[in-house]
Image: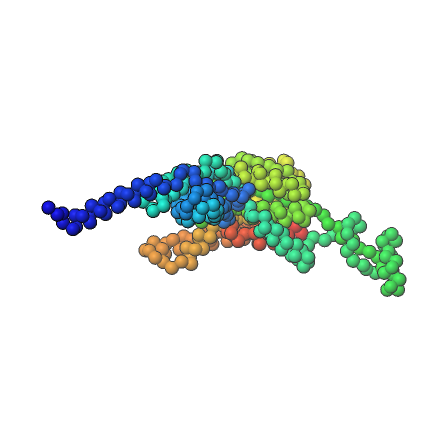
Amino acid sequence: MWAPAWSIGWKASLIFGLLLSVIDLMLRPKRGVITAVRQIEPDYRVGHAGHYNLRLANHGEMVLHVDTREVLPASCEPREHRASVDLRPGEERSITIEFVGKERGRFRVAPTTLRVRSKFGLFVYQEVASVKDDELAVFPGRPAAETATLLSRARLLEEAGLRVVRRLGYDSDFESLRDYVVGDDLRFVDWKATARRQHPQVRQYQLERSAEVILALDCGRLMGNVVRGVAKLDLALTPILDLASVAIQRGERVGLLAFDSSVLSYVPPRGKVRQLGLMIQALTNLQTSYQQTSFTRAVAHLETHHKKRSVVVVFTDFTDEISSLDLQMALKGLSRRHVLLFVAVGDPHLQDILEEPPRAESAPFQKAAAAELLVERRRVMHSMSRAGVLALDADPFTLTPGLISRYLEARTRV
């Protein structure tokens, strides 16, 4: 008795499928035929975009479709990266993994996960391609290329003659010529210029006085507030190192004081580029303690260990007028001996609340609270200015330009 045509077709399809599966299984690529190697840069900067390359290689004899999965450390965003590529026999290809480091430190990267499809795509096997303990090192500050650009702009600012510290003396570079007056030292008469102008000319010299700059960083609980996914302390490290780079380039001696309820780290002021490396090393290990900051102890430490008149730059933050009273009292006392630059590391979220359109019933109350806090911040900054303290209030993303300008202004007061 003949079977129905649909039954014959179903059985033929089943046999064909089984046969294709057996062939696909026999032709499946061996494990390890795809290799993956990460090409990670020596260091990345917190809050700045970074990337590394994942290099895949096909050591098999047929075209393979590969799905990759990279799981980054919890301190990075995004946490996961997926990609798919087709690799011909002997082909190598790089996949770029982009991320932003949200915290400082060294973080282990999990092994790369690969999914390789068989020739006809009926089977997929998964394996860990990279067993090497790769590491991402995230440091404070900005990338070297951006730092070089910043330093070149600072040099242009000084070459333009803005806020350059100049003292007339006889111990440094030539400054200008002027007419001779009775009492001038004859050693400094420029005889060639005198012959040209038919009148005695005297050489004047520019005496550059290098100052000492102390960068005092608050690591208390307020600096642990998160701004756009990054702790305020981490964001503040970039303008701090920017200022240190500019000051060292100008020949200043720069030191560092980190504190919360007690002094956490102190790097005595020194010059030369090596000092910047010592400061980066000290800053890399700092963590927010979530303790109440003691400005009195920080000021006492400075008065004990640093008696020379210097430019002291204090990086901190406050919430309102009442919480800033101890801060103001301690810093105003410090300003009697040193030139003090007070830097409030603000939060752009307050301004964002004022500018965004109301979307809920509570929006007017939020706007009123944000406006009141901003008004109180202005009062505190005005009070500091009236006490003879140079003051700057800016969010950490736009802090560097104003900070360098204020520093050059403070330098003229030493």
